[in-house]
Amino acid sequence: MSAIQRIADGNISVFTRPLVKGDVYYARYRITNKRVADGQRYVTESLDTTDEGIALDRARQRYAEIKAAEKANKAIKSGSVSAEIDAFIEAYEDGVKKGLRRHSEHMLRGFRKSIVRYFKEYIGRKNIQDVTAQDLEEYEAWRHGYWAAKAAAGDKVHGNAKERPSQRTIEWEVGAFKQFLRWASERGRYNGNALTFKFTVDKKQARSAFTDEQLDTLANFTRRKSWVQGVGKHGHDARLTRYREMLRAYVFFMAGTGLRPGEARNLRWRDIKYTQGADEQEAVHVIVEATHSKVKKKRIAVGLDIAAMAISGLQGRRRAAKDYAGDDDYVWCDTDGEVIKDFREGFNNLIKAAGVETDSQGKKLAIYSLRHYYISHRIRHGVDAYRLAKATGTSPDMIQRFYDHVETPDMTDELTKYR
Image (cartoon, rainbow, N blue to C red):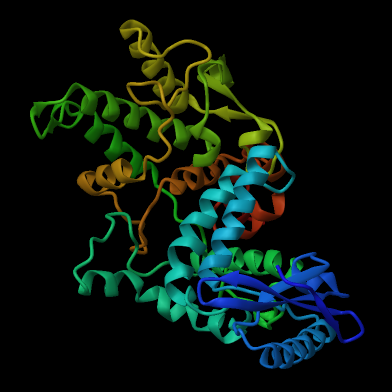
């Protein structure tokens, strides 16, 4: 490095570095508003010239730009949306590993499925500073055509991909992208107006839930030997049989406990306690640890008899086969004892084959619909909203907002009384 020339009251230092094409000039700028430079006190940039006079002119011009950016509280260096998303994911992964507050595996998976998968393709090439509220406003239309465009281009489309995602899905994805933008803004890398955009769902709709009849259909279908002992690519497949027996138990365990998929994913056998409910019916208590709960609170979920029978049957088969049935073993695991992260593909294939793929309005049912079945079922049987909210890890307000269409015994009595 050559001798340093200081200009602009010492706020700019100009020097050369020897490169193949000659001694190229660089400048180091003193930063007074560190927020615009990701917390740095100095920023060093190439002036991309070997001419001293040109270098000094460029350094002064660039310093004027930096001062204007500092005044406007606008980042002086920022990359593409795609590159900034990569930096955000890397930082968030590090936060999860360190156990930082407001960092969770659940949210990390959500970010990967939303901003990494979709927003990189949508506006990944844009400089992050150029992202506007209009980009977020136009995202819904782009997202609705995403998978159709993939199919038209001959790309492979995942079997679980929804051709038209729900408004709640769009709302979540936009919210996740705004969380990324807030992260970038806090580091002085974004100062646009996209953070003012708010995606509004037209109307809060009733949750899609399985009916008793649909669960009966599933129960009958999954008892068929032809389904349980399905044939794989090479004839009878013991792993496929094991998976389908577990999937059957999973469906009725979820319908009978109201757990969220993320809460059930990492359950171990020690988390399940058998007990008796009203009228000496079989029941289970399921310990949901705070680390696996969406609301970060430990609770005990109370499972109905269908959950108790499903999980006890699975545990009995596992014990007999000496197949990961110890207290510390995962309940939902593969033949290597590793957690099965997602039952969606198997579940979607099952409900399609059984003919119970949609609700009465034609809306596609999902694993989450088993939770909605549990909550609706308990409301119909007169369970108090506060108790139900506590058992399912939500709030009474959420119960009332999304399940007020469910008729209760008291409602029937009141509306059929003669005065």
